[in-house]
Image: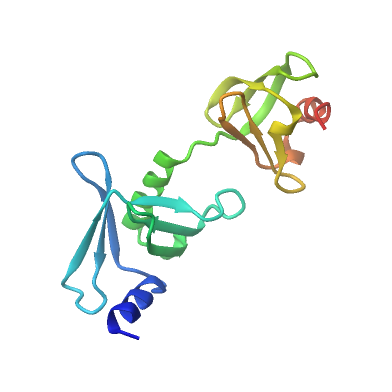
Length: 175
């Protein structure tokens, strides 16, 4: 094996990579990565993307920073393993990329046949969603659901048993 491949591999499995993540003047994320062989040398990667491996079940674990050509540059086991500055920039990059409001309460539905309009309270405020069909309600686990609206926006019900009784009663009509 040549040393370039070995160095690339060891870089990818480094449990606590030394990096900095910031926005450039164009608002794109830039990753500054310390060279493992020469800590005084840094590599810059433009337009990186930060993604969660398990956004619903383990949002604080398994986070990857990808290059613009979708090559993994950094793997982060947990957010807790990062410095405050690294964690803050990573969380900001994730917030910009992700949009999945959590349904906190169902106020009312326009009917129990689809399509129908749901009036809901979410983690981002009150809104309405149009449910095209019952197949747009997907059960991820015994207590977690994803509801897709007519426009493809996905809403999360993180813990079904924690919803109020009225909301659960309305949801039961769709199962």
